[in-house]
Length: 279
Image 1 (cartoon, rainbow, N blue to C red):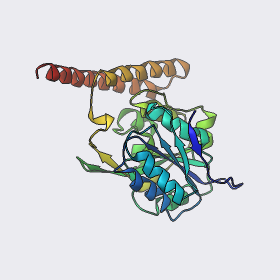
Image 2: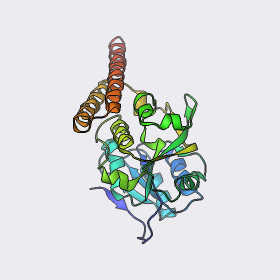
Image 3: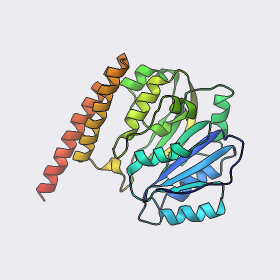
């Protein structure tokens, strides 16, 4: 059972829940947490989920928690990967809207929550598309526009079907029973496609919210092996099930795109295997 430290209960619902996931990122986690703590918009809860890190990540989180009692800290007793870790955060989140933040990334400035709050206003919007900046081994600025936020674009063209470049209405996720597959790579894919396709309303935050670190040493996205292929196939099986349950034209587009991705990952995995055997 997870160890969980909660702040004192209040009767006021928070506007946002910021879910920060962490696994062996001792050099980055403090920056991520501080980027949430330092927001000018204070009607938010910060939930940090440590997926059984073996470095100093947990020690750093516990130190920050002592200084900031408002943080909700969940420490997994065994490593269950990011899908299960995010689900653990969703299970305790009480905010009206959910933002995901990977522990090696950070919110770009201290006013992003305030600006997202103004974008939402008094509406009950299912999803808000967020801008982000990629840095590290490559640089790119991604700002959503009306053209890039259609369901067809998200299915066919979007290069970044990630969960953290969107802000999600929590009740919408609960009503549609949207959660991450656990123990699987590319867990974002099913969550995002299902949520985007089921969403009825959206808004656009056309400014940078996240700074995403690309090519970090040790990141699972920098290594391609047979596990990557197996989990892509698992996603395809779930997409096929979704197609049978509730057909849309977009689901066919998504499946074709994931099949192409599966072939590419298989080629990359084979190259890696052959390279290792020739050493």
